[in-house]
View 1 (cartoon, one colour):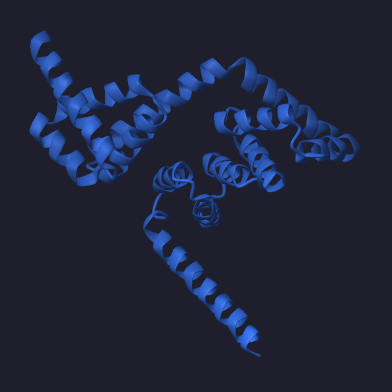
View 2: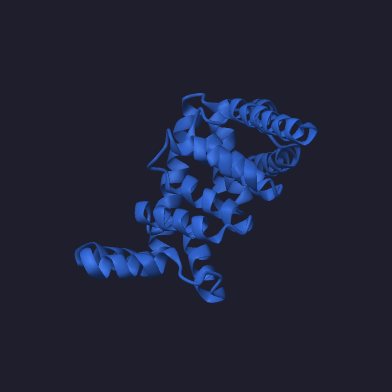
Length: 240
C-alpha cells in the first residue's frame, strides 16, 4: 500500500512539473522567432526534453515552420530517439528542401546506419507502391536543394536581413534582438555586421547599446554586440 501511494505521488508530481513547464513556455510561444531561439538554447544546454516539449507546443500554432520541426528532430536525435527524430527531419524537408539542419542529420543517420529501417526507407516503399508522382517531386526537391544550396542560402540570408530591418524600423526591438542572437549563434558574422551598421545608421551608438541592453537575453551575446557596435561606430566615423 505504501509503495502504491509512493507511485501515485510521483505521478502527481510529474504532472505538476509538466504543467509548470507548459505554462512557462507561454512567453516563448508568442512568436516563431522566440520559439527557435529558445529551442536552440535548450539544445545547447542539453535540456532535450524541454526543447522537445517547447517545439511540440509551438507546432500546434506554427505547423508550417520547417525550422521548428528540424529543432525538434535535433532534440530527439540527441536524446537518442532516432525514429521520431528522422520523422521530424523529413517533415522539415517536405516543408523546405533547403533546411540545412534537417539535411545534415538525415545524412548523418544514413551514414551511421543507426536505424534498422529508417523512416526514409519506409517512405521509399510507400511511395513506390502508391505515390510515384509524389516521390519524383520529393527527389527533384532534394536534388534542387543540393545543387542550388548556395543560391538558396543567399536568398534565405537576404530574406532574414530584410525581415530584421523591418522589425527594427517598426521599433519591434524584442524580435529584432532575437534575430541578432540567431545570427550570432549560427556564426553568420557578415549579416550580423550589416545589422550592426544598420542600427548605427538609424540610432546613435548610445541609443543602440541601450536597446540591446534591454532586449538581448544572454549576457555573453550582449558583450559581443556592444563590442561590435563600438568597433563599427569607430570605423564609420573614420570613413566619414
